[in-house]
Image (cartoon, rainbow, N blue to C red):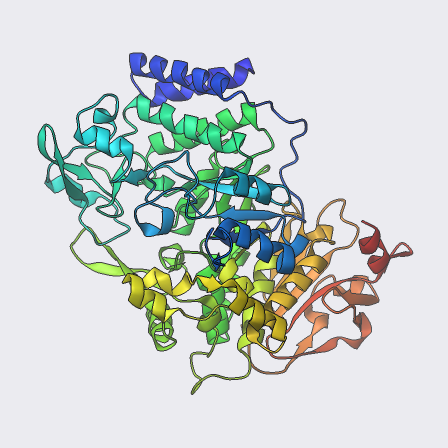
Length: 589
C-alpha cells in the first residue's frame, strides 16, 4: 500500500481522535483494506462526455414474473440502452422505512428486489452507483438490537443524550424530535435521530463505528460500485454547543474515505450528498482532497423557477458567478431526484418572495412542500415535493395547462445537459411520470408523489403506443443523449462561459484548450417565438457557418437573426475548422 496515503490516513485519524483511539482506528482501517482483497485496476480515468447517470429505485418497475431488479434490467435494455452508462440504484438493502434509507443490513440485497447476482447482471452493461447511508441505521438493525441488549461493541455505537438548551443550535433537516426514546437493558435512554425515530444516528466519535463503515465502503467497491454516494454526510459528526453540520471532523472522515478509495479503487468516484446552501455544498471539494463530485443542488430549483416564470435572470446570475470545480473534481447536475426539489440551496440566490411564489404555484400544480424546524421554534420550507413533469404543466401566469408541457420539460433537461459536470436523470423524468397522489395517500408521505412504482407492462404499452408523453419524452431524451456524448465540449472538464442575453434566454459557451469544435448552447425560456440577435454574441463571427447539433441544421453567421421557437434549444458548433467537418469528426470519434 502507498506509504504516503497511509501516512495521510494516520494524520487524519489523529485530527479526529485522541492518540490511543486514533491508533486503534488506524489498525482497524489497515486490517479492513487487507481483508477486502481488492486488486486495484490499471488506469485512473475518472470521467468523460459519455458519462450520464440514471437514478432509480430497484423496484420502480414491477412484473409478477420476476424480481424487480431483473425488470429494471429489462427496461434499461429495451428503452435506455447505451444512452446512459451509469445507473444509481437507490438503497437496495433490507430496510424499515424511508424507501431504503433506513438500512437494516448493509451487506445484503433486499430479497424483495433480488440478490447480488442481479446487481452483478446490471454491472455487466452499466457502471453502478451505491449509497453508503453513513449517518444512521434502522431502529430494526442488528446493530441497534445489540445496543439495546448492551452487547459490545454495539452498546457504544449510538449517541445517548439528554435534553439541554444547547441542542437548539443543531441544524434540523426535519421537524421531528432530535432525541427519541430507546428501551434498553440499562433502562430508558434517549438517542440522537436527525431524520426520524426509525433512523438512529451512529456515534462516529467511537473509532469502531468508523472502521465498521470503512468495511462497508470496501464491500461496495468490491461488489462493483464505481461511484459511492455518501448520504446525509453533512450531519455525520456531533458536538454539543455547535450546529452539528459540516464540522471539521466530518470533512476529515470524507477525506479519509477518499484516501481509502485511492488505494483500492483509484478509478472510483466519491460523491457527497449535501442538500444545503450553495457555498456550504462546495466546501466538500475540500482542497481537491475530499469529494471528487458534489451535487449541483441549486440547479434544480433555479431551472424550475426560470421556466415557470419565463425569466432566467436568477439562473443566469447564479451561473455567471459559479466558480469552476477544482481540478480533478466536478459537479453532478440534475433537475429531479428521488427526493424533492430542495429550497435551502437557493438561500441567498432567490429572494424569499420568489421562493414563496414558486411554492404556491407548485401547490397549484398538485405538489406539496416539506418543512424543516428552525432553532427559534419556527418552520420554513425545506423542499418541494412534486413530479418534475407535472411541475412543467403550466407557467406562473397561465390559466391552466397549455401545449408546451413537453417542450418546457425537454428544455429543462437540455439546460442541465449543457452545464459543466456530469448529467443525472431521475427515472421518472426519463419516462415523464406525473404526480402520484395515490402513492401519497397510500404511504402518508409527500415524497411518494415522485416515487411511483410502474407496472412494467402498463408503462411498456404507453411507450410502445408512440402517442403518449411517456413515449415522446423517453425517445427524445435518449436521442439527445446519443448526440451529446459525441461532442467533447461536454467533457466534465471542458470550461464553460455563461452569457447574459437577457431574461428570455439561458446561454453559454463550452470551449477550452485542445477542443477542436467549441459549442454554443442557447435556450429560449419562454412560450413565445423569439428573434435572437446572434451578432451580440462575442465569438459568433469567428466562423461563417454553424451546425445545430440537435438537428444538424445550418446557421450562417451573416444572417445574425435566428428565429427561436417556444422553449427551443440550439447547440451550435462551427461547421468546419481547418477544412475538417464537425459532423464527420463527431461521427468518427
